[in-house]
Image 1 (spheres, helix red, strand yellow):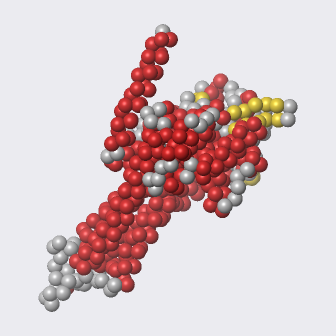
Image 2 (tube, rainbow, N blue to C red; image 1 turned 45 degrees about the horizontal axis):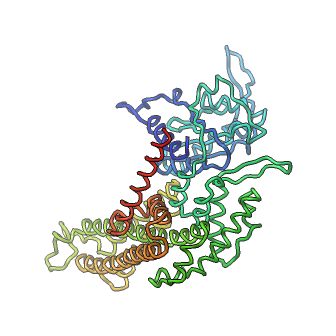
Image 3 (cartoon, rainbow, N blue to C red; image 1 turned 180 degrees about the horizontal axis):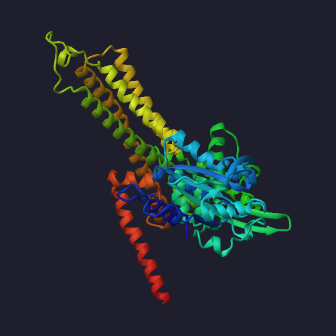
Length: 519
């Protein structure tokens, strides 16, 4: 099962396990809620999907790699207590609370979330002394004497024996108490994730040409060589930062993440050419609308890898521009909703006034809050929402950045009201509308820039390749990117819809004909 389907299955299971009846009890009692057991090769994204699932379901996540723990930390430390049995007092061994169970209660207290996921990674690679505790955990949802709280779904992950010498086979009694899902790396699913996370264009375009290198593992006389989705993602983050610092990413750096020498060398060569083509084909000029006929002819007759690299550069620039426009759109929608809330709280349209005719007095002569206080309250509500989601770890890095940008804009609006001494609500609303209009103008510019970037890309592709496989690939990649699709749904780009309909339909027709010939 690929990662996308796995994620869907986990979310569906969590929804079913957390469903309650009319009396507030779980429809499936905790004892009947089988732990989910993910079995798959290392580095394919099992941990990442748990983080995504927790955020999307709005529940907490406590994650442990169990191989880092001893029996004592898992089930607690023993101590002697006194118990009365049949009128006699006996010394009895008991255990302190498990560190893992304690972490669940700490997470509940810190986040306010009473339901969540307990994710235990590498569960089938534990030591001999810890193995019985793990079997007890899977079968009875407890560590030592301490049960996992109700409302917490157990997800465990492990590697097949061929990837880890420490793997222990679970017996039938244990396997008959879990929901087993075998997870596989699948490039198409990973690519959707890669676009969503903003992975480096060179990584995506390289793997588009060499899909088999997304996940590779081999055993040699010198040890294991491997390349994993996790390695590519971490390398992508490092490349982004190195570019910002003006440092070179060479084969040695790549080999620290892609520990498969042949693949690391191949990608290092590709990355070097990727940067070279950025200068050779004058990317900055292309996105100013300046096309060089000589360069168009050069790329049209270039080798496939070179054409693919240049296409990757074009896609990276287009996707980034469309993403910024979509993020700006989200900010404008949020700003609009908070200004509408201020208007409602301020009661501008039907506000009563005191005998003096001055704005600011309600029934009984009590003075109302001035506009700055009301808007400050709206800003505080946004800040509280951000802090709540951040504390509960429900925000991705990108979502957190969007909230911070929105907060900065709202705080700037509040500061403007303060600096200009605007206390009246009618006047404040008018001023806020002006500030919103200025932001909206910026948003309009972002939309125009994104549309222009898309048009310049089509100009280049038409001039260089016409209605060829490169154009098909360009459209396919745009349609794989969530932000790009969202922008394109409302941008009204005629060429996108024209080529999308003609070329992609033609590709589907060819595939159907090819399958027909195989019959």
